[in-house]
Length: 337
Image 1 (cartoon, one colour):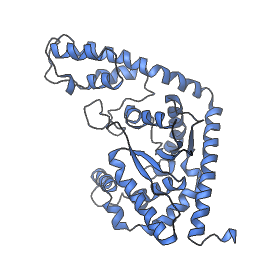
Image 2 (image 1 turned 90 degrees about the vertical axis):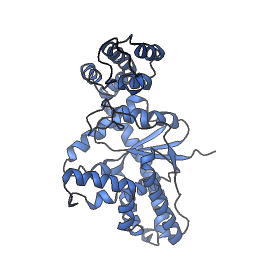
Image 3 (image 1 turned 135 degrees about the vertical axis):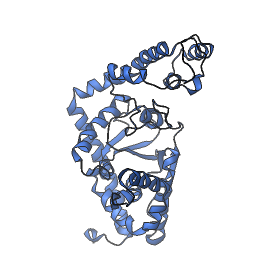
Image 4 (image 1 turned 30 degrees about the vertical axis):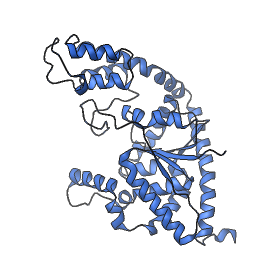
């Protein structure tokens, strides 16, 4: 049987942090063994809100690729490609833009939330919101359908974007004939990963993230600043580990000593400093193989370049096949006449 096709992407705006790893990437490591997997480095989408800082996006394409390879994404199983190198995606975005009204885009819950955040940050006049930013769901639909994506791994907050893609596919097929595949969301089995400060989301902009590239000194500072039970004042005070971010991360990395950590915390037999120091040690052990693999690829940049070139080449061929069918359906296949 032919493997089903998965398409997922990540924006090169910074290095991977624990939120990325446990929220999405660890699931990709399993899926890469089961599907025909296309993994997009979404540099064009990163430019929608980094258009005035292209060097940041360019630098992070390579950084992100190093991170992905270091965690175990296998280039023999996953086609890692750069979005901007697939011109068919941009072409599809133009065609799809005729199938979606501005009113529908503004109603998209994900877009509405992000526009509200931008307005709060830059003012209420909406001047900071660009056409490209509002049209992000159309671009994402082009990403998915260019590679005949059947499944798209997402978190719950991304479901409206997948539904928008499905609407575009249905509209296209109803006008031009059955041409495109309607994708299905593949929900992440892991909820959002909390930040060091207890925030429900770990994120770059929130300053509460642990990055896979953090060195020992940085890791030490971050863990020592993690939020614990505010009711625990003295070392022998009894505490509630369920509201402590240190215990949360002990669970996240599956510390084999977790039961003892929990019992000692509840009984007032474990101080927060000692608990944090144990977490630092366990984090270092967890990160060791990732760091080792990253060092290898950092010292073999030609391999990283080859992986991106090969992945992009395969993605390009797949997108060209889709575009061929789309142009025939739309009766704009002049070059084949």
